[in-house]
Image: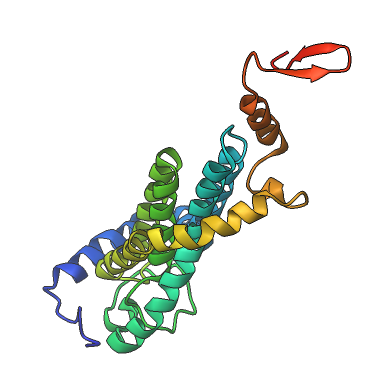
Length: 237
């Protein structure tokens, strides 16, 4: 199965040369930027997106259950990426597809040291798993995350280290893990985050202090009164 893309007439190889050919025509500094972004930058950007979304949702007013559910969905994003990469280990070992630059001449390879198998792309798997999980948690942030995942896939082919089908396979694997296991992850993670929310020390991980105070104020029934030493006191006041 190592010869998935050995034929010169294979559209997979043709598209590889077309996209990687852009690196030959681009200025050297552009290739260096794309190489760094495709290897490290987009992974870091995806992590920042998840953290930004977490910082946003934990500050929203709402019940403890809603907050725990929202944060649980975000915790699932990196877990889904890690699980998808683990699933990819036996897939790579079974397919045993060499890197494209080992079988095809004339490619502009922007990073060195790639000695492992090519199918499927870990980078594409990680970014798409996180992007899909982020989309499930928050549509606004998720759309940006999906865009970052697609850009990562393009960069991997541009860099000459993956075939287009390596990237597509990574997208499929990351999406499947993030979507299919999301209900199970939510069922397991939400109670844990609810317990965290009740902790006076680490409850801020789920809800900010301001969100807690706002929820406490909202829980007060307008117009309700309690007996005091000198008469009645309006709780809403």
